[in-house]
Length: 354
Image (cartoon, rainbow, N blue to C red; front, side):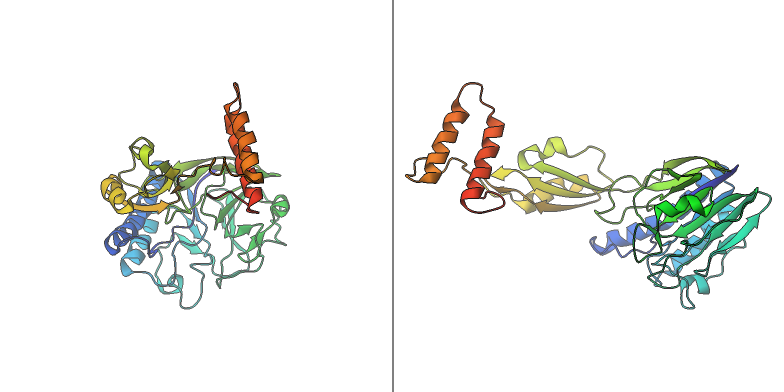
């Protein structure tokens, strides 16, 4: 058994364009701090091997401080580290990977041709490949690991069921002969999956960078043996992107108390008789978050019974439905839904609008 840490998609030096410049710079500093947090985890958990499945950098344009932080963290890990460049940090003559001097414990898979490194002291063999361009043809389609007493691991950036970023067929995974497949590219933790005797997973990104990356982020740590694995997701903490939906009169009750350090999108819902003052709401609640944006999805109050007295087919329909609505024991929620569908049909709309 070998104990590994599997991480991916750091996207260091993300621009964070939706944040003010000062907060965007702070978020980039926090990304660099995550590197040392992972290095400390390696020591605390007595990890023997680190697999980093690509997109460590968001682009080829990274700050000097980022290179220093990355190199220092990798060196502090003091165990073999394997990197599989992805579509954002693909390996080429002008990439940071070609220009940086990496610690001796780091191996980068520079070619799209799958290669391996044997680690007999750990009883394992590490396979991998790397992107050489933003898009990549299937790299694992014909791969088959030769039979061996060594534990077969693979670290690679790729897209399950995709078509442009090293597409990987889940049906093909059992035939690859691996014990663990460490994937990168998807920014949400996939859960630990199994196909045949192979375990595989996406750890997700290490820090959220937008409202399409909400929730807790982290890495995967655990042990892998021949045909067996005991892996778990380990949260890294840090700021989260969160989305809160609420009506204006329920904001105080709906906003979680633990949002002080997080980035929130507040979505106003429901109906109003007086249009919400978004600036006033932002001023009232912005101090409760690291950063707050507001999206208004509320609508004017609708009178569903408007036209009840009209001398036409719609008026007749509304009067009949109102009788049902007012009847003792009526299922009013269902009746209101039926009225909305009926009104939409009168206007030939997909949804009813007042």
